[in-house]
Length: 286
Image (cartoon, rainbow, N blue to C red; front, top):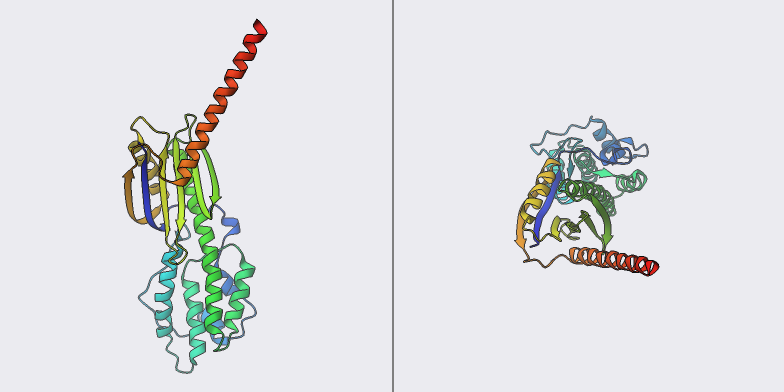
């Protein structure tokens, strides 16, 4: 019997540091390092000299955590509004306040990026924008930051799922991208395993993790999935809801069907090769 577990809205990877720490950067650090800032208001804000009220909003997380693209997207909207409202200097014009609020919001949220140059270019355009181009420049900059953060988050989640699958007893792990969906296939020597897909909603940025057992006919699906779940918990995979269902033995995920078909074909090929070898030895003896 095949068991499927769907973890809806993966929200945070809480318990492990970045695998690629040497190649991942904080977007807030790029913002602070800019030397081409033309707005003294934004520059003063980054250095902490702008008078901004303390808000009650707390979206910070430790360096050991990676927030989901969706949760950061929602936080950005709320925190930007709070920061804009908190700017209490009457001498600031509306555009300066908006730029300062965007910079403050980026600096307070834990966006992680991989291409500093691309982000810096977009931030410079945002900071130098006039009232007609500010909205578009902000959208372009945030799309770049959010897209890079999504790349980091999904990469880390792939690694954790691969680790959890191996710890559940399936040491041969393959990670592939199929139709833009990351697929983690982990099997043992008997062709049993777990196939997982990381699904992303392009509009909402919500990520779901869907995992299915394959090749298990002895009723141990539940035990396997419990071990898999325990490992995911250990690595701090936080999500909104867990759904389970049983398929009665037939794989449901397209990737699981493909993996099981590949395992069957591999077995048949090995059996055929073995028969050919035995026949060849038999003929040599005769």
